[in-house]
Image 1: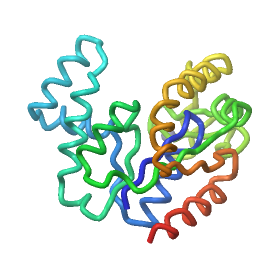
Image 2 (image 1 turned 30 degrees about the vertical axis):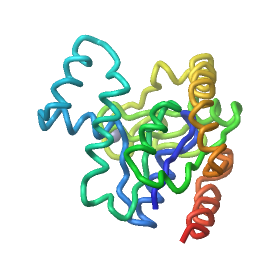
Image 3 (image 1 turned 60 degrees about the vertical axis):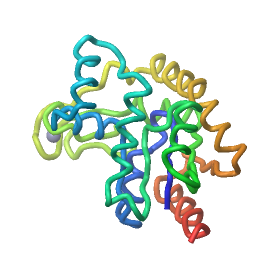
Image 4 (image 1 turned 60 degrees about the horizontal axis):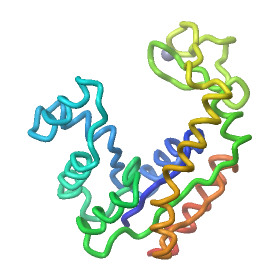
Length: 213
Ligand SMILES: [Zn+2]
């Protein structure tokens, strides 16, 4: 099963990826993780990427695609994968189709409304020590603004304020239009409401996946 997970910030992509990994035993492939591991292992691609990152530049599309290609040649992805953070553009989606004969099975898009994204992200609080995410309303810590595990004060990420969240959402919607359209035309795009509770979102995803078997 070759799946891609799409969704704006605040759609609950991380939560769904985790549930999918547990339920289906598929490897989770995120470009962030690939990049970190290539850099850490000092591979040729990693060295090139590091040079861009150290000079404060974005790692170019072609290099990211090369890394994804190399990751997709590993034996653990033979039976499928969940791809996260790639492809970002229609061009990358075409490259992915060239890498994988037959292409992907489904692109799952967690379509999430602005109100819900704003509510989720502006209420988010993070532990500076262990990185655990809390939510003022949906997942509050046991003690007010204190991490359950570390007993240190939580903070709000500077880009989790309403104006920035709205802007991030709009940028995402604009940037993802091309790639989502690419899979829509192929009949491979599945729109799932990201506004639902994570359990309900997951049961919709499960139905999609069982229809593929
Ligand atoms: Zn903590």
